Image (cartoon, rainbow, N blue to C red):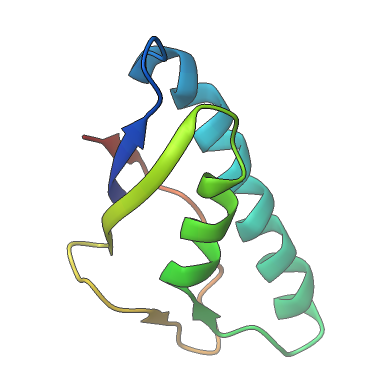
Length: 90
């Protein structure tokens, strides 16, 4: 689960950003899965998610991103594959 707080431009709705946010995070996790298949990328990084979310038009800032309820990077076991369970936007 990814939870984050997005600061949006005036007139931008959270509903309008949700799909783009999901696509950005899924694209990052896909990159990790591809690297995982080569024996790399065992860490899901909050900074990488925040960077991709900041690239979305209408997002001014990203605050308090957490992975599985923790405010730190998620280090995976060798047999874990990074997937998105859910996304909570505040």
